[in-house]
Image 1 (cartoon, one colour):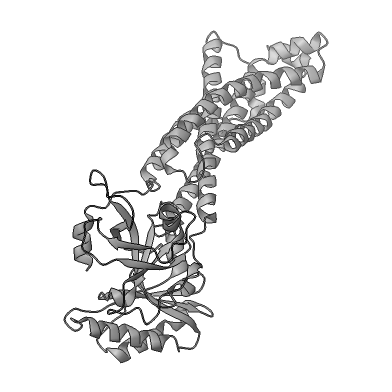
Image 2 (cartoon, helix red, strand yellow):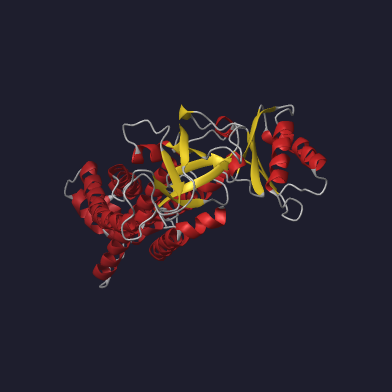
Length: 461
């Protein structure tokens, strides 16, 4: 049946949101960090090699002072701008990951074990043999200590694989221009929805009576129900595989269940259709079990039951549903961690750079500061003068950084989930954080300038 449906359905369109692209974000991180190192590392090394008090003792003025001052000013502006741009990227990534982690997959993965069983066609060529194997296996597994419920499923939400079909709803007009509707399809047994924690919203679950010779039935997701029968009761409606001209049997809708994130929480999901396992009867299915405690504690018991039915039948794979769920967010978690680490490094480099540049600029103005204080300038006036000079440079850097933050946001737009590239919270908090760090880095040289002895400053000149 699956081959016939695939032929009728044609090519399945791509409807998924692009996945988080590590290469794009890695390029942003690498470029920003490399540029930050180019600007920040020389200043940091100068600070390591030379104590601030030695800067204040030098007070050397040369003909090239204006050029060096402009270069240092540009360096601080670049450092602040890069720090804001990278922090904005990190903030967007963190908020996006938070949205991903907080998105419900539409089921309860707690204490659910997933075991893949693939029967060889050589030993199970006929439908009755496959049906008998999985029926007996389910009956045995359901009686195991620690197992609350069990079911079979052709595919696992958030897990590997999948099955998509073209479909047509009774009463809908024919597709125009060859356009075909597609659904995520799954073949499941009795107790599947209760085992997976998927709510049954209307109608009934599948039963043993929905066998190969029984009328064809289906359960649909609430998104499909809302799409095709808004304001109506979907139970009793009919659909079939393929387009409106296909000769496939009509399936009666007997239930509606909650929407499930099939391919990961960061991807869109097609409308969902479930059919009974016993009306599909393929060779490979997943055995899903809800357990009282750690699902992995029942693995050996399940393995023994499978081997007792067929001594040469191995388990293809064993995994918890929680692990499948975590796998869908692992890439976003890694990117959030990397962006955070590199952005913190960029902020520290900016702080060191601002501190070093302001210390040197203050040392070169020691003569001017000495004259001002000799003429009666108060310490707080000197503090305000030096601090204001540094913060003007920082403000220019903030303006540059906001422009860079907008550019980074646009570049990362396809990588974000549940957040816009111009998120106002991120664009507000990021400059405030950098300005706070810059103020602290600027305040130390300013306070030291306040304590300059005017007599010594003039004698040193």
